Image 1 (cartoon, rainbow, N blue to C red):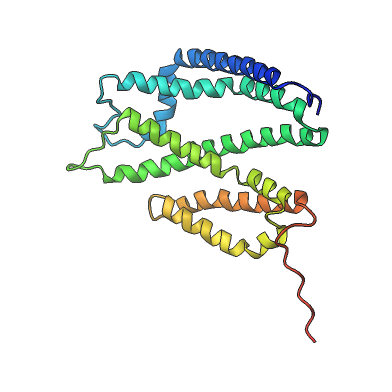
Image 2: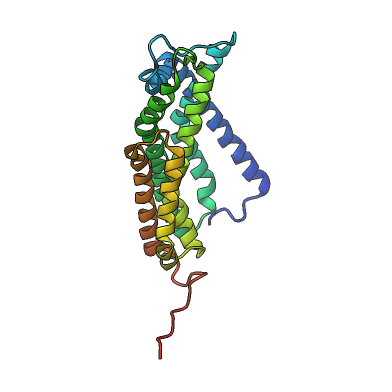
Length: 252
């Protein structure tokens, strides 16, 4: 720690400056993304359009719905473009208050957090969406015709990718739980069978359609993430952990 004597007003002033830089980066990212708004929306809408029945299309029913949709997608893309600047400013603000031992963890954790989150979002977009939309569109027929709106679809896609991105943060979450001693490797191994059963039950509930392949596509990565989390806890967990059950005494 190098700024333990820095006054509070100096901290607040530095925070204000770094927030301004972050806001400017977001505005610039938004403007750049808005210039490609139609291409961005086409990319986001591609999984649904590939499975829309003939005669169906994305539409908007509100006067300003298309404009608001373009604003939302440009803001999301702008935040993504500005993320390197935001992370840099956050790091420059908190780094002086960290010990050297803590600094060694921050950059790898940030990097792997981004990798896992983007991996989860990509898995949702490229794997889950095709199966989901193919199933949902089977309900479209003469009496019910699929006519999804742009805002509803964007909200659905964003929340789904966000959810999968957060789920894929499982190894990072287990790393912190292991470091705090809240979970143990032996304890997780004992609960492995129940965890895998829960994963497949959740996959069966969340996966549209009765086919086993789509359930395996969802459950498989989650099982892999859980096994990866086990190894992370084994390698990085505290040696004297809470909740560690004592060894059973030998019989006799």
